Length: 129
Ligand code: HEC
View (cartoon, protein in one colour):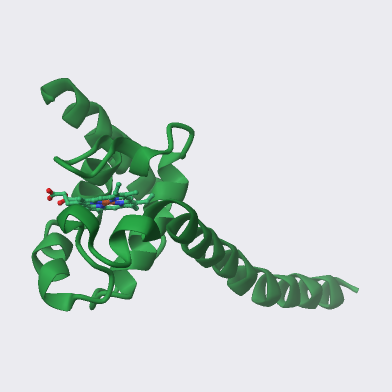
């Protein structure tokens, strides 16, 4: 009986983990399409165009925490939160992750610890703006 419940747990874990990752990827694509593609698909106002590896390389080198946080607060012609006042940090971060992974980078969905760092960096950035 014990072995059986143990097996169920393992099976449940195997099936739940990828589904969780898929959900996050779906949020990234959806957010990108709804809030970012209008500028980042074609490069409106010099927005870094998704797929242009040369443009993204130096941005990717800034690191996931910094790039996500600074984008969220807004950079020059990049509107804060992509112009959507109710866009959460978590959803914004998934959209950035999606854009980077389609522009030569290899990032993962930010985990809890990284999201905390992103929130911290957003606070710092807001104080210096
Ligand atoms: C109205 C057009 C517009 C929309 C909508 C928009 N962006 Fe941008 N974004 C820009 C522009 C322009 C820049 C370049 C800013 C600069 O460096 O001058 C930029 C830059 C960025 C950067 C790089 C920031 C940096 O530190 O240089 C990130 C990351 C980013 N956008 C993410 C997003 C995400 C994610 C969304 C959707 C949630 C989004 N943007 C929506 C125009 C837009």
